[in-house]
Amino acid sequence: MIRSEHIFIADRGYSELCPKNFGKESCAPCHRFGPSVRNYLLIHFVKSGTGTFECPRGKYSVRAGEAFVIYPGEITVYEADSKNPWEYLWIGFSGSLADRFCTLGDVFIYTPDTLHSLEYAIGLE
Image 1 (cartoon, helix red, strand yellow):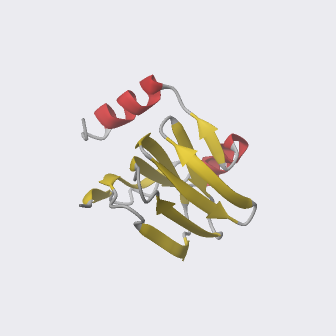
Image 2 (cartoon, rainbow, N blue to C red; image 1 turned 90 degrees about the vertical axis):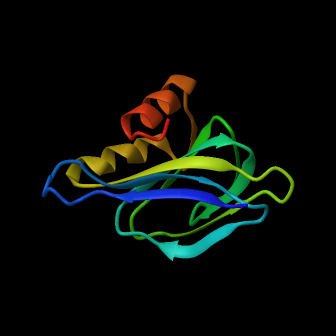
């Protein structure tokens, strides 16, 4: 069963860092998104389960406690595991400061406090 909450944020014209959308999804086994191209930066924080993320630099296995970054203009595909599908939160940004997220790499480890703060800030807790 797929449970999804997706909220689009009104464009307030921020030029440096502009939040675009955020949401949360509990995926069904093998749920797949893509191939797709975004025109903004998008970070998925995997809360539980596992899946794969594919971008121009490679294919990664991603699990709870890790996040993956989708960069603007890149073709990406991601898919929930068949036996342990993931649940994730995402947040998208545009603006001149969004490029600073490029230092994170394609996949990175986040702290539990990061996820808790994000859930609280966007009202998904």
